[in-house]
Image (cartoon, rainbow, N blue to C red):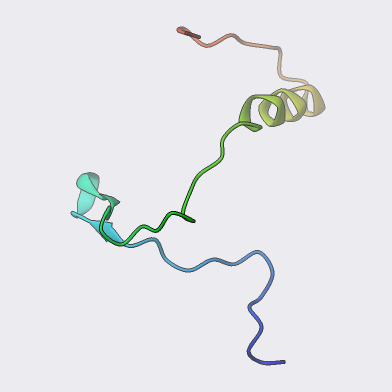
Length: 62
């Protein structure tokens, strides 16, 4: 079973640039590489309610 990955871990994202200019390397990304932020707003709202932080609307929500 030593060939199984540890849960909650991921490999490194191939990047180009350095310092503040780091960005994903488009040549190394596959079709299965993606980022899903669709649940980010609801997660933030849940965390704010749990911690007692009042709701805040972003400056530009368009």
